[in-house]
Image 1 (cartoon, rainbow over the protein chains, first blue to last red):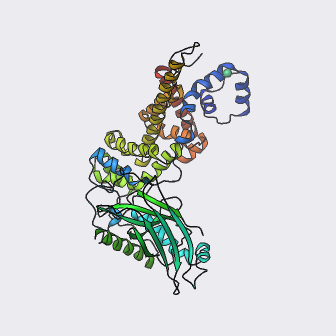
Image 2 (spheres, rainbow over the protein chains, first blue to last red):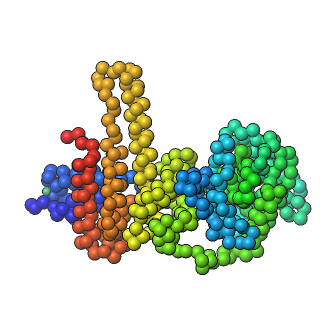
Image 3 (cartoon, chains in turn green, orange):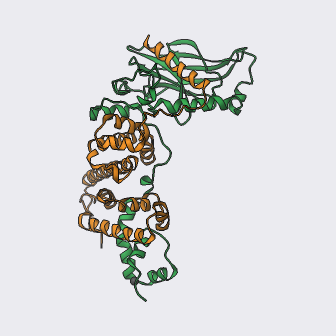
Length: 254
Length: 216
Ligand SMILES: [Zn+2]
């Protein structure tokens, strides 16, 4: 019986099934098998799951762009186009370049563009009215009893900790009461965020001082979708995005 | 005060979305992916920012899949963009879309990281065997030949023209059969097969010439 066609042996090297007669020949011919093995060396080297086509996206932390901007000297910043709204004066400095990413604290993956965050927030808002998570949370509607309380644990030994409570007022509006035990920071401030479990989408709740304060929760926000309460340190750089430096976190249970 | 202004701006944005749940169509001024690719190749800095905005998530997803979340993955993503930007002369827009090319660069960076780990492992093992003075053989542990092969193959893939490169990448990385590749690309079955054969031969030659000798 003749040897297999070279093309067939190449396909065999790629682990494609061969027609029956080729397969039978390959089983009995050491020469053809050696040919397949020779071609297979390259296949085996790169046919690894890590090299497969990209799967689900993961937003890199702000420090990644800061490093790129520093290394390339590029002045443009991602997200500038997403900020066509009047309030957003596009920053000329690279976004996140001044974030104190080396000052310790947990660097978390962040989406650079604000636009997707807002779109997801919109989806959460429209869906939350009838969302199971929202219904479960708003059951205790009549009282100011906390619906859920979460301890804010320090990240990476940061000297920040505390407690956050979701409360519902008689009119049905909700707020987050935060008790933060942390030192005052210079040229920076603390900010509270609600973040989804994938740590990509997030809702900013506002500026926080050490001590106790109450922050409004956006009407209709599905807390089950954004269960992570995150306290970040934000530099006074005018960049509204999360700095990537978190000092304390807890997870709401619903 | 800046912080309070930030906050106002943010709450304003959320409010806007709240009252207008239908996402507005992106502005006409927004360049499409092909345009971003052409501007990237031409050295337009804004195109680097746009490329990052559009594809950093995908690339970082790859890096995280390989190394888990953290500094190793972040380094891969960062190096991918730095290297793509400084080596943008190698990107030819007419040869394929920019995101596909960036994915190729990202594979290189992942392979680089593996090679560094392999080197560190060998150095550590060499130190241990030296300390123990094993009688069996105190030589430096061998380079992991797969690590070297991987770099060589990725390098050689970069040198391939189209459609050869696209075809073999679909076979390697999208796990498509030659029939599926033919269907996907519209290239005749016989042509796909002969490109695959010739590319695998070319890769084999490269490994034979530059790769580590395999144990007989
Ligand atoms: Zn044979």
